[in-house]
Length: 276
Ligand code: KIV
Image (cartoon, rainbow, N blue to C red; front, side):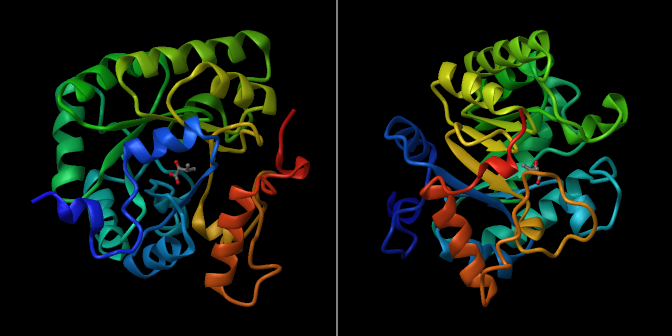
């Protein structure tokens, strides 16, 4: 009865929350990428990524909006279902879009939809201490949660653009406190976006759960990039932390393999991808 989740026909067992906790305790870097469809999900999975995130970044890189704000729960379910079909080993995390978790009941209803209709194994939501009650409520209902702090793209209009967070001491301390409160509320993973290395290091040091960074320096438990950024598909000015892995690769599978190897060996991110 339990064999399907454990093996799913693969020589390597699927990643789950226990795998991720073990990787943190053994200091094995966790390699993560986003994906939005089955074909890319399968390539990312075969490259050895441990987590695949169906990010609401799909609003920008797939749907062509300037922000993630217009993305709906139905959009997330559609793309999550496509990605799930491409995965064998990687753990599937799906974003809760803007305004889909404004109350505990709304958050529960939408996360259940993401899991039942979108095959998500964990949901990700943005927010610090203001989301503690929501995370507690989801945890009480056995919904695995990733809490996204630092730069929160859904708040872009409130914070005045996509910019580095936690540069002043007070803000950095608040971020560490928020991370601890979210962990205490039951968050299984914390995702930290666009902060100075020191903040990445401090948050990772105080938490027992894995911390996945994007532009959070080398001293976090894992790294994530938006797939289209890592493959040089996204046009325009890139954030400092982005590396185009196609530049030194002959094919997409090779570039994805090089990304996973660079995360595992801690070659990525280099100093040129970090904030101080
Ligand atoms: O939506 C997304 O792709 C994300 C990443 C930036 C981590 O949240």
